[in-house]
Length: 72
Image 1 (spheres, rainbow, N blue to C red):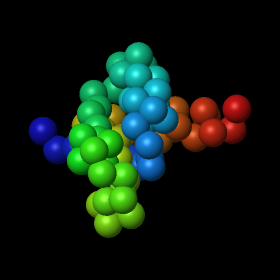
Image 2: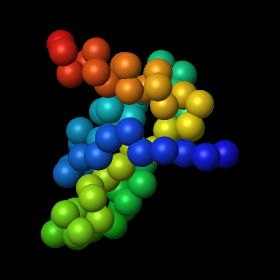
Image 3: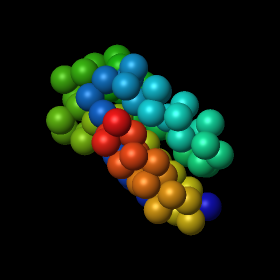
């Protein structure tokens, strides 16, 4: 299974809320680097934040959901 990054966050709260929204919509996704950045937030710029990784065939749909949420 190939996963692609669709967005990233500086804190775990926002990342988990967004992850939950995508999972509720039936998107196969997970967080990458959540534990590392939660333990040491100063690593966030170097690692690129907490990333939401989405199953590649569902990435387009996930991006559309994220864009709709941003408009609200």
